[in-house]
Image 1 (tube, one colour):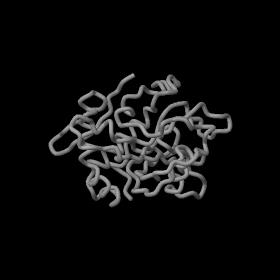
Image 2 (tube, rainbow, N blue to C red):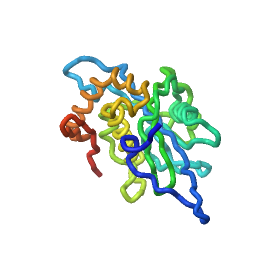
Image 3 (cartoon, rainbow, N blue to C red):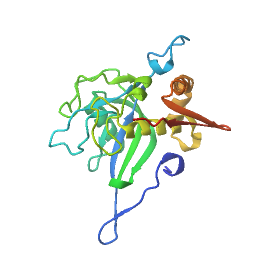
Image 4 (tube, helix red, strand yellow):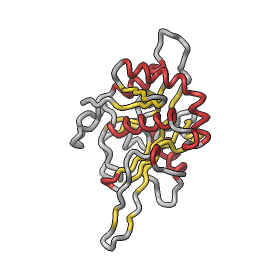
Length: 241
C-alpha cells in the first residue's frame, strides 16, 4: 500500500549507521476504536457527547517498562515485537492495555513517522469486543480508568505533556494522540476511496453523518477547526495550553 501523501504527515528521513547503512525504524501500533451504540437522533443532544472513543490512562511507568511513557491518556498501543504482525500487535495492545480483544481490524488509517527517534506509528481502525476482560498491563495503565470517553471529553482534555516534553498533567491527553486521531479522521472521512482499505471505506460510509455532526459541534465549541476549501473539507487541531 502506498504510504505517501495523504497517509503521512511527515516525510521520513533515514537513520544511517556508522557505515552509511540504513537503520530500519522501530514500529509502533495504535488502535482507533469508535463506538456508536449510544448515538440517537435526538436534536437536543450532540453526537459529540454520544460517540465514544476507546482510551487508556497510563500511570507512571515501572522501571522495567520499555516504552517509558509519561502519565497521561491516549489510544491503546505500543511497540511491535520481533516477528510479530502489525495486526497481532494491535490486538495484543488493545487487549493488554484496555481489556478489549479486537473483533475486526478494518485497516491502517494513518502512518506517523517520528523521525527524531526513528520510529513509525501505524494507526489501525478497529472494532473491539463488547466484553471487557481484566487488564493485563495494570502495572503500566490504570485499571480503574473509564476507557470509553466521548469525543467531546477527548478533545476537551488538557495536555499531559508540555511542548518542552515535561510531564505536567497525569489526567491530561497526549498531544500526539490528539493529532493522530484528527489525522486518521481526515483520512477516514475525506480521503479518496482508492487510497483507503475497502473495509475502511465501508465503515466510513456507515458512520459518516453522525461523525460529521459531532465534528461540526466540536468546531462550534472551539475544540477543533473544520475548514472548507472548495469541495475539500479538513479537520484541524486547535492549539491550546
